[in-house]
View 1 (cartoon, helix red, strand yellow):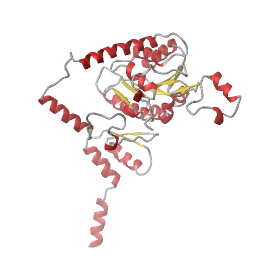
View 2 (spheres, rainbow, N blue to C red; view 1 turned 90 degrees about the vertical axis):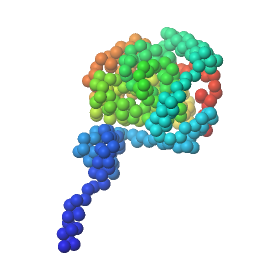
View 3 (tube, helix red, strand yellow; view 1 turned 60 degrees about the vertical axis):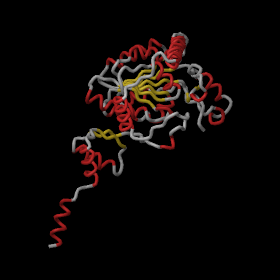
View 4 (cartoon, helix red, strand yellow; view 1 turned 135 degrees about the vertical axis):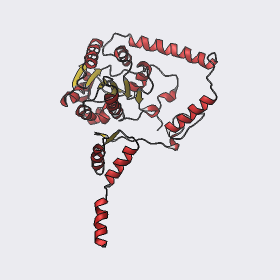
Length: 337
């Protein structure tokens, strides 16, 4: 009798992976992202059997909510700690009870509007420069001209992300994804893939424009294979200045190597000049473009937006020493180390 009961219980046993998958399904999870390995493989298979879509990544992503990080950059007047959905819901509920807005005639609004105008004028002046190689502002000006109003904009990098925030416009809520205040590297392609999976299912024809610095692209560039594997609606723009913050042109690079080995003379922030990142995309079946002028940029972006059959990567060469406009506050560029 005991043996019979044991046999019955054994037949009823369910794997841990199936329990997890069922729990995810119960919580209305539609997509999961992971790196193949134990126990992800078993969970992914079980989830797919229940109708949950699995996207296999090449680079691990992580999210933290840490009270210790509050005020780590600039000391805030007020801090909020908690789940972003819960906190936002609570704030909106309170605003509904007591509607309030900052007085539009206040000194703060007046100062802000004046600053907005001066920033816009400075950006337009930089964007209008005709010299080659291009600068950041010229690139983003021509990109902005063609961006669909409903696209998602993902940006990652140092100057690339910071300048892109001020020039590339969003017209819909929750359509901009970037590394936030800490400039965390390696998250851009993961953000783009997640947005693209949802857009492909719910809004066919909607583009994800992922703007990467060349250094930032290096952190998770092999996710291009993931993008091509699932044929996702992503256009990657790699703004390439041959380095981290700044690099050198080909002639300067060759001159340096005449003196000593690269390990002895090349500054740590320099990357190999004119690297053809677009070939990473073509290697996996997508479309790649190498551009050096505004006309080439306009043409390649126009072609990429028109071709909905496959993802694209546009490798945009800019002036290696290009920087952003001067900042008023030193803490915008200083290191916390």
